[in-house]
Image 1 (cartoon, rainbow, N blue to C red):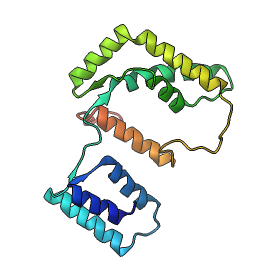
Image 2 (cartoon, rainbow, N blue to C red):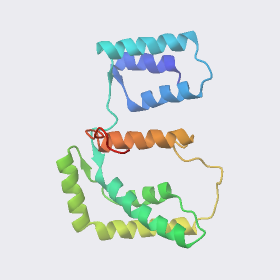
Image 3 (spheres, rainbow, N blue to C red):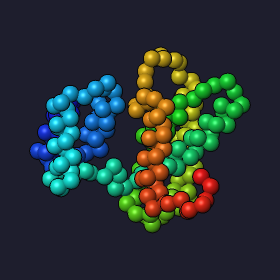
Length: 183
C-alpha cells in the first residue's frame, strides 16, 4: 500500500493503526527518495495527528504474559542445546509452536500481569515446559525444506535495536535511567 493510500485511510477512519505506521516506516526506510506527493501526504498526516483529526492507536494496551513465560523457557532450553551441540534452533518457530498450544494470559495492568505470572508459575509451568520441549523436538527433527524463507520483520541489524527499544517501551514505560548511573 502506498503512503498516499495509508494517509487517505487514516483520515477517513480517524485512526492510524500500528500496522499503518509500520508500513509508512517501511516505505520511508526502503525508498531512496520520496516523491512530492508522498511528502505532501506525510505532511497532511502530521497535521491531522497534531490537531487530533487522526489518533495514533497505541501499539499495545495489553500484554500476553504467556508469551513472556514461553520465551523465557524456550531461550533457556535453546541456549543449553546450542551450547552443547552444533545445532542451531529457530527460537521464533519454537515459541510460536508452544504458544499455539497454550492458553493466552492477557493483562492490561502491571498488577494483572503480576497475578497472571504468579498463577502461571504455580499452575502451568509444567505444561509450558512440556510444550516448549515438544516444540524443540519438532524443530530438531525438521528437515531444511525452505532455506530461503524469511522470518517476519527480519530486515536488518537496526531492526533488532528497534524491536528491543519497542519491547522496553512496552514493558517498562516508566523506567528512566538515574542521572550519573552507568548505562
